[in-house]
Length: 440
Image 1 (cartoon, rainbow, N blue to C red):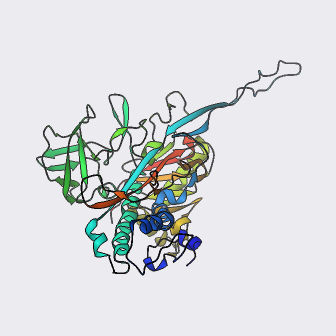
Image 2: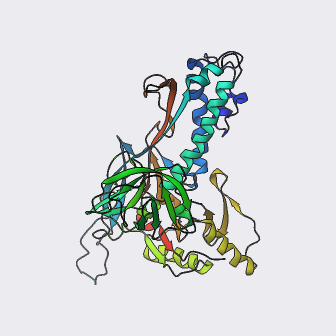
Image 3: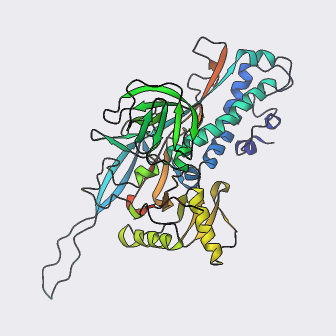
């Protein structure tokens, strides 16, 4: 397999590592060395893992990746905020309208960061001596796990909601709303559903956040999840924890304006809160459209109304991508099948994602999407902004991808990271649709 073909492959089969990709050797017929693995990870595993992560994330896979509009650690773009007032009708000889201009604002937003650390013990290295590919297989298992973990984290963050505490917006609250009940080691959430409950997993380390002060009460590990009851059980009771606390992935909860924390999610981008230093209260054009309610059932008519609202009350563009949780997509398909409007065939989108063709767009399902939300996007007006040369790559700033573990263990580590964020260029090009949670 050529090096160029390997760079676009989403596989880590060690048989595909080229014997010679350049002047450095990737020979598998001898005991592996840190130098060989450093080269293999840098030149081969990086591109394949990057493509796999980007393609496995529903939101990311369908958006352009803007690497040009970056200044330092910020994304920068222009926003149309007001129309010109220089249009009018006059009688013969009348004074012409005073010349005006279109209103534009240059906005900036910080990039966020996502890291994944791979660690291989010294025992794995020693056991590979004289055994072809043994260490490669250990590394491969870590990389396959990294692909899933990073993809899941990117997908989860893509639906982030900003919560307000003391007039400051914070990102990272997984549920999007405060919990309604806390008893000993069990949290019951007020507004959770299938999509939101999937953001948790057993073994996940979470912080318990004071909803009044944003202070971290403590960290603990999730030991059980009951999706139907909308509860999680944690290993340790945290002093001071109470009903109303937020739950966030440990270390991730921070003000939305802070560089380096979680991504802007669709709930935030399509919300009514201030974003990128513009407030819809003073800039009405800087707000996404909304439709539906908690009692609105999904239907083809609802999609038509939502698309029309962007054209009549938004920027006038077309919604070409709809994202929902599987239950809403399945409910719509049932309705279309009953009307003989849907034959089961699906459109294939970028990254291999399958979608249902509906009026003026394609609907794709993502398990991390809240079950009571549908996002209508004009993909020309929303992008993932990424720092140049920082679209998921191995950290080799010290000249090496692999480095000795810093925790006094006999192991080597490697960091996979990106500096990126989701940004909407024109906020009223999109619509946030609220529905009832479908039943079958």
